[in-house]
Image: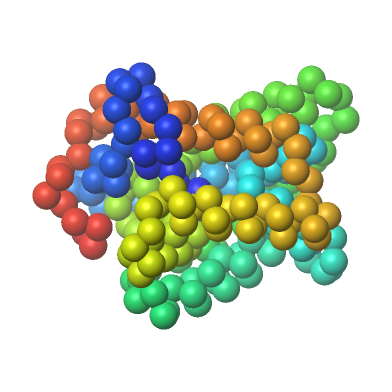
Length: 230
């Protein structure tokens, strides 16, 4: 769903580079798979918490939520379908999916639906605020966990990097155009654009960078010679 290397600054004051996220690229396969699948479960939970807060979900989920008002499908199911549609856009961009790409496309929506079903929508405002804040923080942790094994980007991040390569435009411009278009479409369809969405947009970059530094302090720095194809 949303990796933002370089979109914020952590405690070190340095922007994260794509290579910085390959922390577990050369770790044993078991460790890499564990980080990937735990990260995707956390991502589904974090997105679910944002949805259940009713204070505004993450930007792409504004679109998914909007679509859910018009079709008899859950938000999680729509996430899976939209992920597969976005993957089709990889074909003309000549992007190559990895295990992480496919797992991201299939599992995040499944986890979101499961956690929404298990937890349910709270009514108390303080619980909703807690869900929103926890969702944003957990989303940053999840992003780091599923990216550092180096199994490939999620469908939406691959779309961004593919368009960046093909158009020659800077990453920030391509990401901004995509996410603004997604938000506008979501709002027009009835998705909720509110404080949680704005808080996520402002905080996810710095938080992801912070937890990346934590991962590097635990597992050691990434190997700059490791490629994205590892």
